Image 1 (spheres, rainbow, N blue to C red):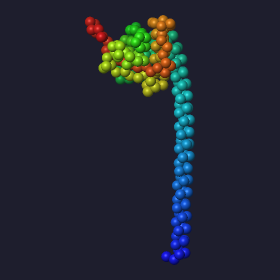
Image 2 (image 1 turned 180 degrees about the vertical axis):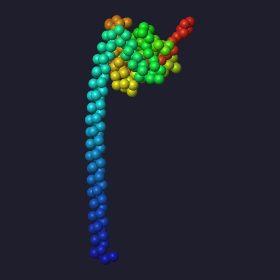
Image 3 (image 1 turned 90 degrees about the horizontal axis):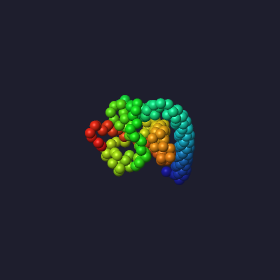
Image 4 (image 1 turned 45 degrees about the horizontal axis):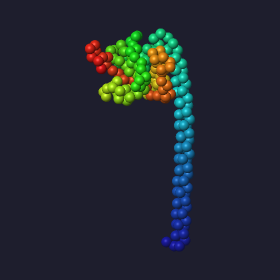
Length: 195
């Protein structure tokens, strides 16, 4: 190769490398811009969903409060929670199904089901296990947004309603606003067998 050919080759090589670098940099910039746009979109959609969920929860809270003012309203709310948590069983609360309400050692209430089971609702299954109220075998089902966005609010409203009636307003403990609630399905103790 002649010196002119070498110079032309080197110039073409440099131009080619510069073009490749410019192309790579511009692709990186475009990719970053697309990612930022995607993140902004996701953040916006997430906020919209949170607002919609908050509206659904607020609307359901008002519905539940209205139901709790009716005779047997709390059973209807719990029937819906049981239907969401145990869809295959058709579980329902007996008309006079409230067995007990207690704040010690953890907030809880027990209701009798029409299928012979006892349904325990609590915020602290581990504390109940330590106290001997629950066995190791008892499995808790979280009552959270995986069932319905308002599931936690529904059971909290029922707790507030039942606890005020049974424990008296001054003996109802304040729970954290975001306290998690759990459902534990237990077999009804048979006559002569105490648990």
